[in-house]
Length: 70
Image (tube, rainbow, N blue to C red):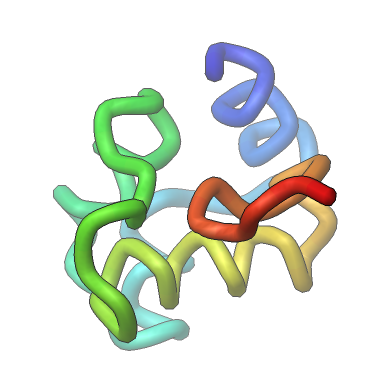
């Protein structure tokens, strides 16, 4: 997951500003970027919202953790 943080940083995003813009908690965003949270447990939760937005912003690469691979 180190790559996730590097991709986030290389796109010029700041954790605090990104969290504020997308109305999520900064500590939760940091834990997602560090690979501590995956969103597998709670449907519709903040972690899933963050990961979905990171995917839209082309920071998250690959399938979403809660999606079943074919």
